Amino acid sequence: MTRSFHHFSPELKQRIVAEVEEGRLTLREAAQDARTTISQVRVWLDEYGRYKPKRDIVEVVMRSEQERITALEKALAEAHLKLLVYEELIAQANTRFKTDIKKNCGTPRPTRSATATTGATAAPSAASSGARATRTTNGSAGRAPRATRPLT
Image (cartoon, rainbow, N blue to C red; front, side):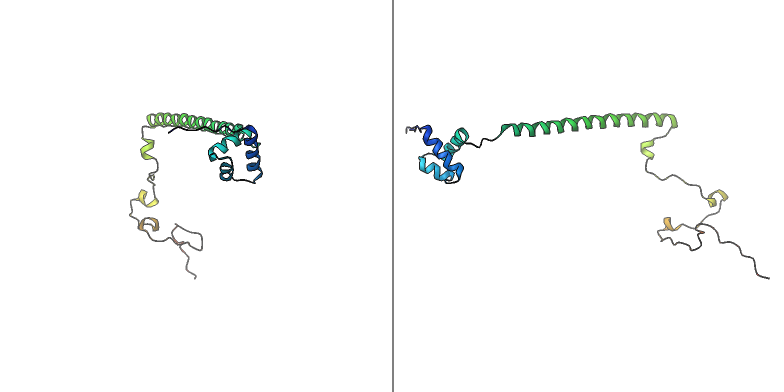
């Protein structure tokens, strides 16, 4: 089966393109009118049409994306460098203070209470027993009640 090629005059192409751009014809109607395909009418629109997509816009978008990628790569490099500095700082502190800061980070420090120094055993606090703590009205939270003198 042989394929036949139609040669269209530039005047016909320009007329079809003008009618499509003015909105008098759809792409399908223009293709039927010229006895060709819709893709061929699109080619004519690219060739003869007044509306030509600006290819610079794509390049501008690509440039801004490239700038964004460059900025992100720079930020990543700075963050990586900062991480290396922090790791070296922790390593130096570990050797100087003879401890493992990473391992001990986030664990509660042992605290000395007044009862621990005297050797007496204390009742569990509200926080450790799971009970809810209550506020006192006189502001003497955590202190023993004051001894009052009897009235004579």
